[in-house]
Length: 171
Image (cartoon, rainbow, N blue to C red; front, side, top):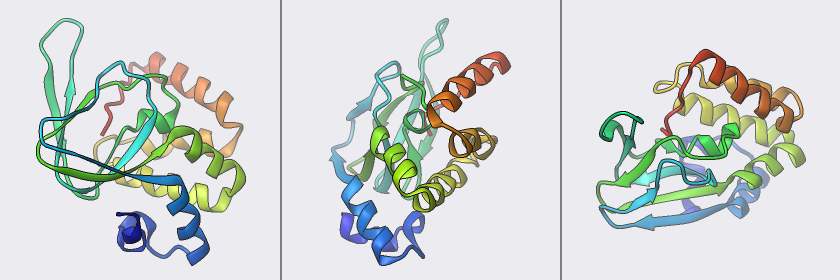
């Protein structure tokens, strides 16, 4: 699946060196229909980009049954908590068909930002734009992570989100 990186919109118009670098950071992921990829409350480890298939985002409020928040398809991203520094996923993700995706571990993504700031910022900015139709202030909330030390920015971002009552679902 990684051979297709230049053809995925997230990676288009990158230099061959940037594409090679990203291929070393992303890994293939696939699963059959009905697979729980992660549960709400699991440690936020990976960000996923769907190549083929469909997933459903399930959210369980403390006072009610689980709800399907939305469904995601080819080209969509999920596991956003791994990017913004949340320690746990805020929703569950369940495949609704055979799924093929690529994923990146949160530490690899932030190492990319630290070691290769131009490439890292480009990828983070593009990820925020992919998510933004479902999370309107994704781009604004990711900027503190890019503009300063990302560890202190993540703490500040999480405090701000809690104070404003924002809940980010994994999509």
